[in-house]
Image (tube, rainbow, N blue to C red; front, side, top):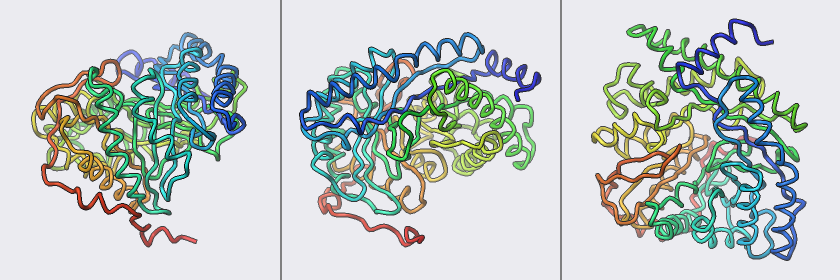
Length: 448
């Protein structure tokens, strides 16, 4: 039951504090679309998505108009394509992109492979096709899971992903390597994540499911302004209360969308996902706690408090909080992160430390275009190790911007924003990456 006071608070959050529903994501299982002939498989995929998702965008628009709550994106996630691909995956990729255009969604995720323990022939075909596919489609997103706490790190996949990211950047060099913004490398990928570029509909999900992603960095910052200078106990309690309010609105939208579309409600993902707009920054929440800029000493501790309090508040508001749920720190999508990186306060190594305590990982980071494939693989391996050992989801979405060097700027536009090119450690790790094989799972994986 939503009370009058909550409605008034929500209206204030929308009008004054940049609150929005970041995405309604419709998950669709495609296991029944598999076929040995690539063109027939592509046709089945296109037909099913267009049939199931035909009313998604209209329903989202109706809810936005009727409830007065901004719903920024309507998206689709599908079964990892490696699970249905029996031959050439490229026709399926283009069918997915056409289906995204036909249904009106801004992104479709699931051109994915699950390779934490090894690779099937379908996985290998998906990986080989990623650079071509991401450079020739508009709305398709891709992800690859290369590690898990249970399986360890597939270093063969890590090595390949460094090369794939380099090639994808080169194929989209006229757009500052934009193809890499649609490609994420995971450890411990989750099945119900509604956020791109890593969304896919896991095999444990229903036939169709509605997952909603909520975001409100501006709301949290505004709440903290009222307790400026007070102890961290008060800060944590304030964030929890604010996250509770945000999640309640997300659950309302999710249940309404579920009822109208006649599709089960899955989860609310309470992730503080920023945008390049001023007033919508996770970094500025950290500065409100007392830091000069994100990256200053104390940043990791502040982010740990924020992430924990957000989760606690969300759990109080809904029985079905899932996805990633926490604070995102994408550099190009957060004006505070952009400013800190441009000022030289925020470095890649500090961002890696911050990923130990926040949602996901090294996200939307532009690096010099001449960064080697092995160095990119080393960055992926480090982040995967953090996820594996700490039993959390981590990810890498870096963009080696062709022709750009540290200190230059790249422009992606829209929610993807812009960013300074960040310097990368010059010491090489080629011999380490060349070993391949698998880094074994840690002892804490043995939980039975």
